[in-house]
Length: 204
Image (cartoon, rainbow, N blue to C red; front, side):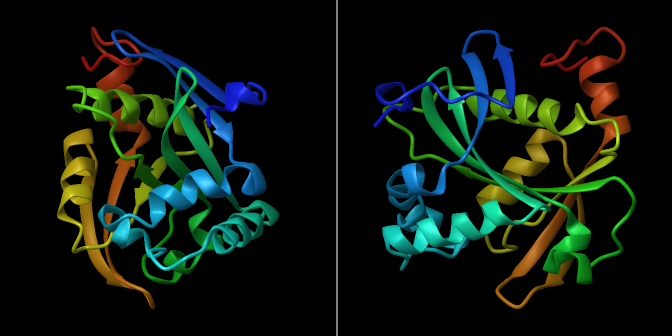
């Protein structure tokens, strides 16, 4: 069900992307969004998310716990008013990943799960979405480097990060997975999207 059927939730970030629409980042509501997220995370394509066997109530409990943490946050990303992505952010030094690599001041962790596509994929959509999410992350000047940690076996996710401009780091072992670290620094972001002849959302 579209959130417009209930109310249009206030966004923490809005980013117009030419040719696609407006990307809106809205806080995830563990109770209201559990069924929607459950439908995404229990598909085989989402197996690396680690929630294939979760019930709707399990999903609600997971995100209620995330919502209780000051260091971790979960969002639904909408293209206009259609949910297209589950987006989570965290402080690496308050997360198990912080024990797996040297956390630098200004590091900011993210997780990203794209919703199942309805119809034919729109060419360039993932790149446009990543630009919008990078803009959200880097609007806080204290954030100097974005950190991602997809499962090292998830070749599609790793390739997606590389295409978006992330630089691969080491492969590290976490209790639940072997993760491929990748990083995107503020300097790289400013050079790609704000420096030279480029503007936000348009690589130079």
